[in-house]
Image (cartoon, rainbow, N blue to C red; front, side, top):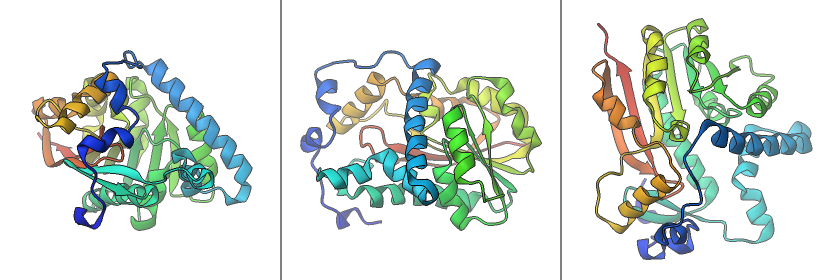
Amino acid sequence: MAVQEFQRISADDLESWCPWVGPIVRGERPYGSRTYRASQGEYEKNYAACSAHCERLGDAATPEAIRRFQLGMDRAREGGRKQNLCVSFGEELVEMEPGEANKLYCWILTDAIKDAADTCNTIVELGAGYGYLISRLAESVQGVQFVGADASENAIALGRHLFRNDNRVSFKRFNFYEASSYAFLAELDPPLLVYTSHAIEQLPTARPFLEHLEPYRASIAAVIHMEPGDHRTGESKLADLRRRYIETWDYNRDLLVELEARRDVSIIRREDDVIGLNPLNPSTLSHWRYTRP
């Protein structure tokens, strides 16, 4: 995609697009340490609202319709508010329509998964919510089973309802923090491709995730992440704002560091800050596998 196709935004104008810039510059900390209870409370509230919207839609409810509600896209249109987003590609900032930006994010992730899934029988999303990304993957990846795993009871119930007529898709209760909740991976048809999308960002450290996943390494052919990257370096105004934003909201900062430190992991691909639907918290795409003994 050519960035020049879109209207560029200066980093000096970022505050008019991102309401978090002002508090960050002023040194305010609206969020304390990220804990499981705090994160889970946020998500249960969000998915309860999504479930209520699903009930209102009735038979018209689809993962896409729930996603639009979740992002506030329909409310923005009805209210006449500015609909476009400031989206980042590396250090470049551009103006994009929300639906277009969301589709591009999904395309980047699904394209990476498709490339790595040729030999896999099951694709697993950890932190799947109600399965929106699975719905996008299922459109283009055939001949595999999809499993969405999440800690939210509301999300799991909503996902099971939305995919009730698709026998390729199932949902499991899962908690990144609990080693026992990874056991369902042993029940799936291998080889597995496991992926996450801005789910590990909720963990104070990625080390327990990697430790809990390791017992199932023999079944796992590939792992793909779209998660916050490493913003320890960089001297631009945007790089500084990103560091301060991630620290303020206490998002995960060690996934890539932990992966690079492990001797049993081979990183196949890494693309830093490939897209930022929130330009202060852009996604780094990484693809890794376990090295075989």
